[in-house]
Image (cartoon, rainbow, N blue to C red; front, top):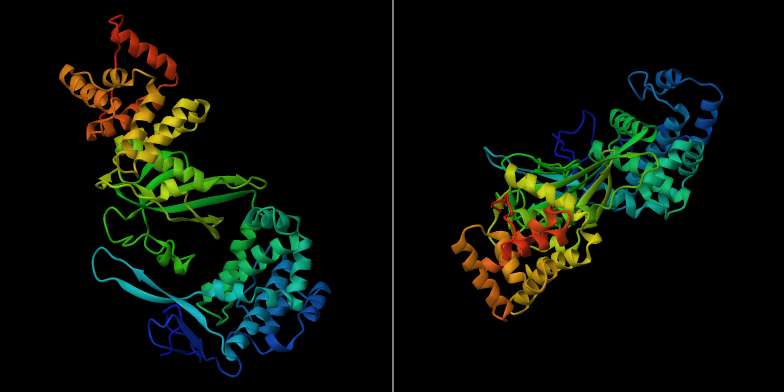
Length: 479
């Protein structure tokens, strides 16, 4: 039985075959002399004439009966736009098949599907997107692309959609072409598993596009893989930001080549099975959030709450309305994994991480606190004597000149534990290398400092306690 590039049996009557050995990275399509993807009129009928007849009053039901292209009436909000985009997609399929006839190759990705019980399953998936994007300029020069762009200009919602998906830099024509025409073409081809045309696949892709095009709200999502952390259940950090286990195939669905961009052994090891997900509901004119900055802040908050050797990335994957939006690098401070043993994020420490994440948003208003945070996080990746210097400077910025005494009082209630910590901190202040207790102490002190909205007031309370002027009730967290 013929096999499609997506791994499913070919549709009856399809003569497409794929040759090449596993692992070669590409396959050659051998279509029949008339590609099964396109009806006979796909290469012979000028689409401008078809659209002229459509505007003259031909109904969609008539076209269905005459052309036999779909099995039933499809309700669409903008029939002229639907037909123009369908014409462009059909013409592009025929053009791309002709390119395959002339020796073009579609690269493939080797996608692995892990299962908890049973062996892993493997799938060859064609990388349709890069194949189409390499030929984007040639496709744009076709008459059906020009007609489709004219129809898009008649829809005000299309310009808003394109600007949201492409950003403000490209011209309007370029944004419409890249986000709407090429986006629809790629979605259809991926649903077909190549360039074997399927009407149902196009209708589904168009329906999804139209829902997004004319919708009043847009859904943005960014997902970054995590290493050095495990979770037993989904942990909500703040509204729209959560840590959860990765779903099988969720990245490969939009980016078949994603496996090459993931950390080593991601999805196989317990501490390499989580993602950090950012979701946001956007208005029509709203800009997407700064995902790399949001992810970096969340990583810092979790490091503070758990002391985990946590890293995100190296890239994050963005979608807008369920469509691929981009792949962006994670900020280096968050993408680099510090040394240490992996840990689990439970509900308690997840709640603390969420609280610290909210407070991090106010840290820039306190330059000393911001400096203390930066120096602590840089110390995670350094060796002595540079690490000890950063720890020393972080505590000094946070608690002032008498930081060994203030930190000992802040962090410990038991007299013996307070004395032991003060001894380590005093040695650090005198120039010795930081002990593990001192290194962990700066993390705990920063967590306490962040949770207090008034850091100068906290320092005054610590001094009063040192002078015996007050008893300060503390509810310390075991972090």
